[in-house]
Length: 290
Ligand code: C2E
Ligand code: MG
Ligand code: MG
Ligand code: MG
Image (cartoon, rainbow, N blue to C red; front, top):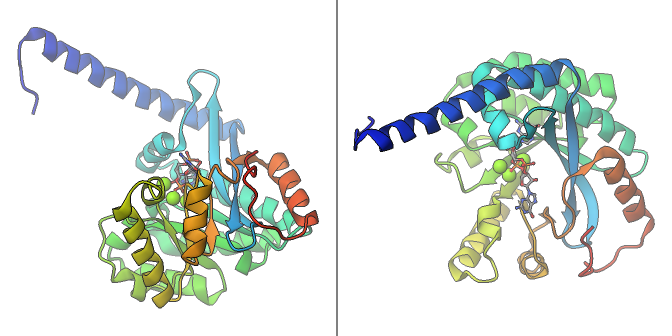
């Protein structure tokens, strides 16, 4: 409900509202153009084995810079695409590109590729499963190299088909990760119900590890719980060496973050992968930032 606290604040509220509506309309319009004209690109952020310091995979992240709107963050356009249905086309693009690249990169390293999926894509579980299998067949990427990332929001929907779909993914040997762990509001029981392979601790808990005792306890507990459930742990958003050291001591298997590398265009990620593959296993250097 809008409060009328006098004319000025009311019209200010309206103009802000209109600006937001207008931006969303423009993003919807330009996103259609971007899809039709090949303006979307996938970037790749290395996944690091914290114990060896080596690259063992990548997460594919969508990038879009529009001629009119400039850079639009994925958090913003993915949300709108979920509402206007374009998420299906974006999802197909991300999956196809990522699997194609990862299939090619198998010649350099037996790396995994993580692809983000929106809960909206799971509304038609059959179609999505068929799509994933078709893309794996077409690109020749081994099933065990694809990591399907979903968020806790997916677990809130109680669709009966979801359970069998996720079970089928795992049966085929495809990896399944729970992304942004700790930020959703779903009950933890889903962790036993579905056979996840990895749990990704959200950046929000990793950010303040050095300063915040409570966050340290929380991360410790999450890692212990994951181990009890036979899940591998990925820490997201590692920016400082101290964070990496702490996580390594707690036996957290994997890490991702600006400390190691930002998300990179395919050709730059490929160079990094080749270099990393040539160099012997080493301690994490302080100057690992690119
Ligand atoms: P996410 O899947 O949790 O991806 C991790 C986000 O954290 C990425 O943001 C990544 O660039 C960022 N990040 C990684 N390391 C660091 C760090 O050390 N510090 C900081 N500050 N940030 C770091 P990005 O690329 O902006 O993507 C945001 C979100 O948009 C993703 O969160 C994901 O939910 C969604 N998204 C991106 N690409 C896709 C896609 O292809 N499909 C779908 N469905 N969602 C996508
Ligand atoms: Mg993700
Ligand atoms: Mg995440
Ligand atoms: Mg996220």
